[in-house]
View 1 (cartoon, rainbow, N blue to C red):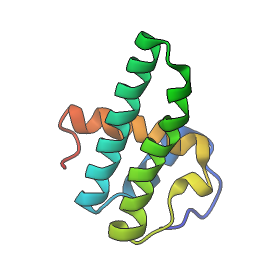
View 2: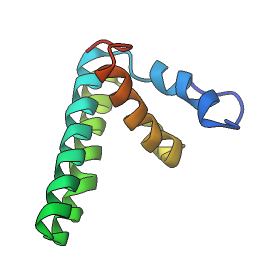
View 3: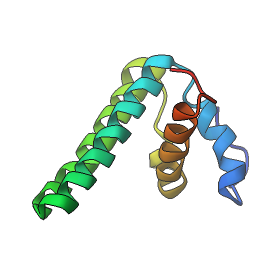
Length: 103
């Protein structure tokens, strides 16, 4: 799916974002990556080991991009919409936790 016009808000972007995550394995990998990011941020804040922040994008993007390249077979939205995509990762994580989106 390719957007025909720029998104004016996250509310416009999110349906497109979800459409780029149809494959359950891709969604699972996003969920794992976002879980690791949250855990790593919590551990870093608690331990004061600030160098661990370098691992945050590796965990988050590594799992997500593997999902796109190997399972979803599409280009991650991060490349064209980095900020909306970042917010989308956490919104999809929330929606999975709330049962709105299945794994």
